[in-house]
Length: 304
Image 1 (cartoon, rainbow, N blue to C red):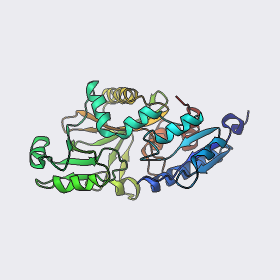
Image 2 (image 1 turned 30 degrees about the vertical axis):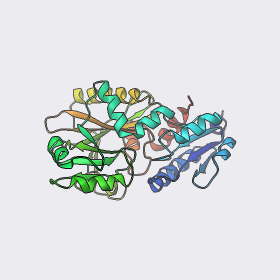
Image 3 (image 1 turned 180 degrees about the vertical axis):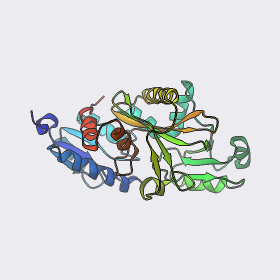
Image 4 (image 1 turned 90 degrees about the vertical axis):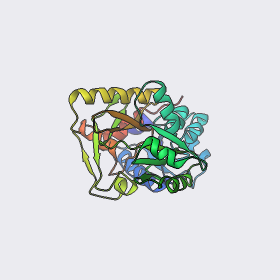
């Protein structure tokens, strides 16, 4: 049976109207080329410029949208109503995964380690929060991705301005204790945790520039952790993904402290697929090249 008949007509959803539109166009363009290169009848579909009703002409959807309306359950709900199988997590898992605050609540309730935090409002006692969490700390919009709106607070008195910056992107704002022993990620495809990647930015922290535009960010795979530690973290990452209801594929980021303890940071239910992205890098280390990864994710497409 040919690849075209396997999957039918495939919409690659890309672009959209979130703050991560540019990243999504990059991811989606590469996914589209990889699918078409395997003879799959794939077409670009940008929800920002095409009516969603037009998706009824497709048999399957590959979601390469990032941010709001793309990985927060909104587009997933539309595809559910049209009964079109789509890649990645369902409505509930997508909505929870997009919300760093509610992801933390779930993980903490299940006993998974995650950095200490406080919710911020304009009326917060910023000085008290700085003292309680300690410095440095990170301030982030709870429902944005790609490090958009995030600030690193390094000196007393800086938290208030960081809150204002994050609140421009989302009224729900988190302050999170800085865990400074290293940043890592675990990619997940199906029920398998991929090799761990360690991220070493040349900048002060892994910000938007370091993620997408700089060529001096280092990615280490093998990651340098011991075999036992890697197994423990990968099992925990699979549990973290299961707890939010994740399926298909995703990525769980974690931090290490100086004492060698790990803390799960957040989950990404529609991972980036650019040439700087972490999940394709981990898949390559596991022997799965980019076209094979894209095809595998498409094979896992489902609906609730």
